[in-house]
Image 1 (tube, one colour):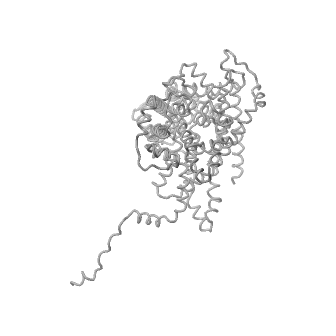
Image 2: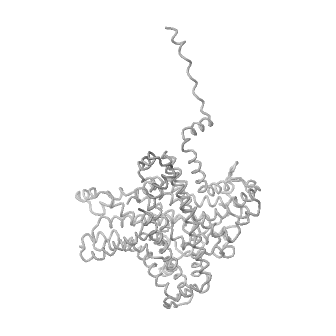
Length: 333
Length: 306
């Protein structure tokens, strides 16, 4: 659960762990069954301790979640006064015919795929390399460096990358021009580069927390395993594939499941291109951004439709993470 | 016996330690890990490059900034960009103050509430305790369909839009995970201390305040650091809830300025002073992180062994 928090989405966590959800659901059901048998005990003290937190949580966190589920099944338009008729699954019918929805959804899937590939591979190698550094002080420095992007404010991180990748004066453009000539740096402007660029930035920003998670996993692997393997003649590649990766599978699962919320992410594009501009040829319009535009910028603010979209994205990422969870589980002996 | 002194070899001159010899010695000592380390540095460069580049740009002179081939680092640093940014970014101090109020407020409030509730859920027996706790945790797994919309509606209804206090309340309400962390931390503490305090005549709150809470400082730091980082960097929620320019936080102010959405934030385009603004906007959270990272990594390592 602490791991959940690492995504810094806190209350907005869309990422869900199937096993966590199942365990929580059964614990919840047991608590319901036990309620009748429980004594009042230290109830006054208890309510005084948990009361303020629970009250705040219920008002600002639990209520909007429930309310959102209701909105998703209505034709709520914020700017039309007193208009929020229940319309069943009509929002989904509209979605099926909405070309922009499918395009944005496709972009988001691509974005998520790139984000994951980068995150998994880079974070894994960085964590393995850091775990082999023996000086505690030196390893500490590396851990801090890899965590630095995580602490940067989202707007600063994206604006810094915007400068860095700016087609005119950015360092990358100059580098590319110097190495391959002006033609290559033109792809920085290309609509097809938009999603990869945004995904790379988002991965850069989030990778540090995955490095830390993997390091925690790596540090907890018993060193004797590696010694035994070395004595049996296993090289580093064999040790990596036979010991490290299998033992890290649970951590990989956690990372994957946590990052599933990336599918509905809107912030990166909203900061990188601004709220009113969706990038070249609208290529920065990921699904989260599209829902935001519908809810807060377009026409009479169709909140029902936008909420239905968010719900679809949330259920899709739950489904994907459940699938991957089962795959990783079955791969584990 | 006078020959003794003559047979002794002259003392070996101490090796002169030049930077070169230190480097060579270091290379010999660590040659095994060197290729791995070079690879690691290369990978870490990806983490650091944009950060170094921004800090360097913020210190460059005008001439260096507009070189045809910009250099990665600066040779004669200047603080002119910072002075220029402070002078021209109208409202920077205001936004900075707003960010500080919201972040500190939310961090303090959330840490206190999470600690109290974590203790209550871990140590007190009362009716419905587990039901309340698991309901809180379970809501993490429900998709946020309404997202910003339901929150917008709620905040308008409560009259908390365009209010820093509203932001503080909304941000500190993300309590499910902090409460979970604090509950775990109190569950891991041995109950004997508290029992002893109760027998010695403390009441519940005193036992919590004087005995148990001080032992959970590590987890409190983890909760506080996460909240500080999250709120300081928050963008979308603040953007949606705040229309009044005087209440913008830094994140919003910066994005508005540099994306040209609103030109009210003073006009300048030089990326040297932009970089200076970025550095200033990130410094509080960086300082807070560097000051607490010792607890943070330890707390994380302990915390993940739930």
